[in-house]
Figure 1 (tube, helix red, strand yellow):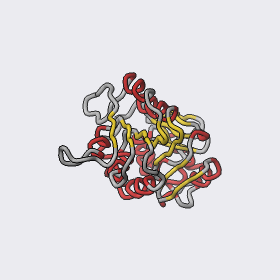
Figure 2: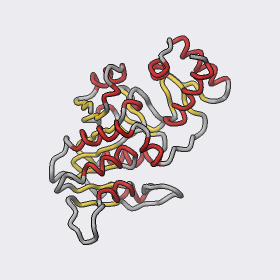
Figure 3: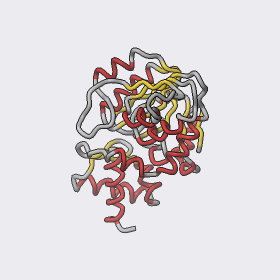
Length: 258
């Protein structure tokens, strides 16, 4: 593979994740550690990224793709993850659900269950959960958290949202991180997303992470859950055999591969 092609692929990963580990570059591109090191040095010299311990960090804050774009990426894997995650729940439980493409699919699958109380800051998740004719009885109780809205956003955020989360206690927080690895736990690129996820983790008895294979073995800017705070990771079969999954299996109590 030409270096120009490799650099383009690494930049694409950085644009999506904000941070890419050396191990991820080696595995994704199928190159040696020395080649990965040269590419990292080259990208820093070009001003396209900043070298950090264990990999590369994006320069500046790249715009996150719209939810519709993220939902289309690895949609089959995310659907499998969402269905497997529902199998971990019991009627009568109270859930926190954060905003993201995977948790939007989770909301669709949660409609098959009854007797849940679902608390979310995601407009899309709330709409999926409440999709019924007016006056029709919903299977579960749906609570949409208040908070600030930004242009184009499909979620509430900010101090008001955090305050509302702290009013509740949940059995399970079901969250979709930007990245998860065996040392740094779960993380997000944006501070406001991490703040909401962190509050949900704090107010829940158990944390279940929903992360497709592309997020494993990575660490983004803002940690919100240590590895010790994660009870279950649900991922897809694309992670099978990956070193990142092997390391997470050693660190976590339970992993479900959908």
